[in-house]
Image 1: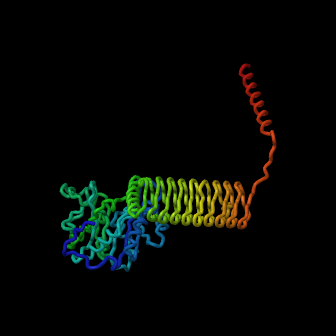
Image 2: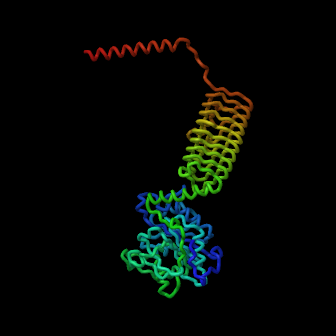
Image 3: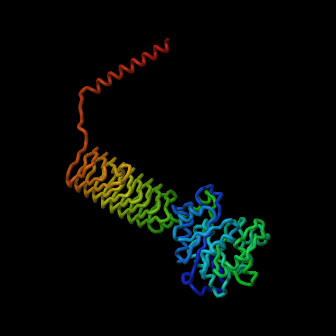
Length: 474
């Protein structure tokens, strides 16, 4: 964050010590997304973009979070739940008009209001805090805006400022050549005291080409009243990058992933090919974890220290304990819990199942709704048959049990400690501790049958070939 605050304008109180309301504007139609899903609900790192923003804002302990929507109200209500109040802007007459719709939800509130945008999801809590602290500096600005300096200022609105104090806010189309030459741009984010904010909004007009009420106009109104307005400048233009299209969504995802990969490596994990590893917003990765190529984490993955995750794995809603090994080509679904030193190998899927310390499922298995004891060995091709078309049932496998290859364990069923299930068995009844269970049909042997079969079929094939040749000659 760039410090442009004059010496006479130092904060007199911490942001956390004052009453705060957050207003998030999400009334845009999002037409460039070409989607039935509301624009701010498109996910980045497995989390809707508006929830990224709300999580950052929540660290400031606001008393209220209000989300202003246009269409898609039902989607937003479901997504934010009880963490925010929904206000509706209908019809939609600009950003100032949108913020006005939050006034009813904030009736009786007295404190600071921070205005954010739902499609600008990665504003840091420190940036929000800096804006609020600037609002309560000794020179008491009426409004604080967040500025940024992009490499290419394009058609952004400009902030004309001197020593951190705004002289003028101007839209690009209305700016002079000299004003367009400034690189300080308006992000649209601002902070104001509630009593100032709504009083200024009531005076915003719509005498412009679009006939809309623009939020930045409150700054110019305050300046005309002889009051001050201040600008806080972020040193990271990506922080205030809006997302309006699928391409911009993909670019935001890549920026987020790049930073998360760097963080993982800085925290002590090894990423063999960082650009091929994709994290979720809440992925936890310990120290001395090795992550090979093309690994994808969905939400809810927790990886302890000293874990090896081999190539082409998908891990979501799973916990992996220290010393465990996963993959290659393994899938851990929600509820998977791999114990210390356990191993899940290639083409193994685990769902809502726990593997005890040192348990192994090395090849081609499905373990769903199961408890696998310590040091148990699951043979290749083994599956737990956990669903009868109506209900799920659990399989329990005891410590040191050995399940032979290509076995089907038909739940609910319990395999005892040190038991052996012979290869190819379909087990539907409990197996006692130390017992061998073999469930196969008796083998039938017919000497010479295969030779006679081959002779008959060869003769039949030759006859058909001769008949076809005769038909062609006729």
